[in-house]
Image 1 (tube, each protein chain N blue to C red):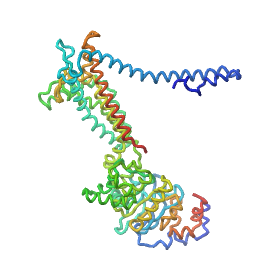
Image 2 (image 1 turned 90 degrees about the horizontal axis):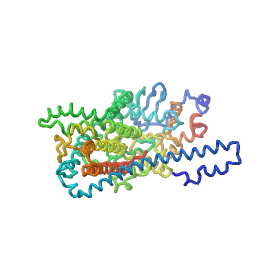
Image 3 (image 1 turned 45 degrees about the vertical axis):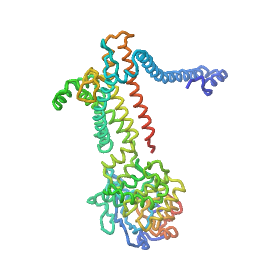
Image 4 (image 1 turned 90 degrees about the vertical axis):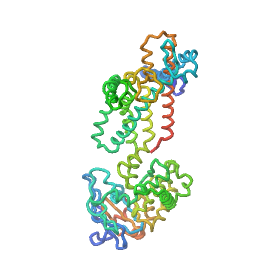
Length: 277
Length: 319
């Protein structure tokens, strides 16, 4: 692996930027020299990359490369566990807030940035209350407004038709794919500025997976989306931009089409052709 | 499972053994040992069922003798329970009310306190503190109930009398409060196990929406653990209804049809103790009344357990 890292033949790593010039703004967020530590373990190493506003960016790479770690920096999930440490900046535009600054309140960031997890995790509540949960946390008490927003979120998440007659029924009675779409509805109900997807289809069958992919596709243009995926075809299908990470570092970031057709670095080509990972 | 009913048991192996003479002795022994152990295990399993059936049978049998002399109408409508008096009355309701009131007071203490302790230990306390507090709490349930009874009569009752003037020394309030304290560890320990079994993924889902720890614990983790917590509550209720020593000592032995916890009243269990201690001839109505009271107690706890079983099945969550 180390040999491959140094033997880059496609481009000179010193003169070729990791982030392709094809990745142009407006940016919703910019990661700048981020380092992250789980206790002593250095999980992210000087990662810098932008995320284009209202576009889908896929984070790919082998297990343990740091892609999920980076994703969870955006909503400060690492703050839940002791011994974790951030360095650097993740600037959120347009207000120029550094998301990972200790001065920034994690709860506020989590209200502004939605997340969908690897496995569907609906609460043991009704379908309606699951989607209303984030709205209620933000202080919404008007029943009319809640009902309207829940309906809009369920429609956006393409699950309204299946749930409109059973909104007061338990969310855990839905199928896995429906539960995941419900979790997407829950995440988008509060109109977050960024939506994080952590391998959202890894626990689903192919049909449920393609419905989630269609859904993410339909959310393009409304939300800035970051998706971690193990599935290269999935990245190819839904991501406008793709970033490959390896051993805690960014290897290459480019427009998905450009990167899949002609990667700039040998390491990227090796990963895309299945030679490692 | 009985060993003779199963075709795959060692019986077939034993038949094929004579050819292997050198291992015959050892190999022949093992299947036999297996069969003996299987039989012992079967008997152990059957014994618990048999004992339960035996107890229930005795209760029903002796109660039938009781109900040949006392009508069900009188049993449920008479306002007095004086089976040992010269002028006997056989209304069970004064004992039932005593049981329900002391149990109610105990649950008013034990369920909220036990739940709060469980939520604190599971969701807030650092691991070190939790490991320290849990055994201490469980020590509460190791205190003999006689000690609790005297604690209720000598310490809590005078306090209650100061706060609520005019309360007699024997009152259901003190007994219920102390019984509640006794039950707290039953409720908190099982509830905490149920809360901790809720997967982290669910908590992260709430945190990711901006929920703080309290909202996550109360609105997300608690509902997800409700099946296990219901079991803890049911155990606490059963424990309170069946508790004898505390109520016999602190709530008095006078049957009293009232729902006022400030008064003294005998519970079903307290009556059974009292009547069992006196010498009632075996064929007397006083002796038979013990079994009738016991049957009522048995039916109350049985129905609560069945309700708890239904509750667990209804709300079971699979992760």
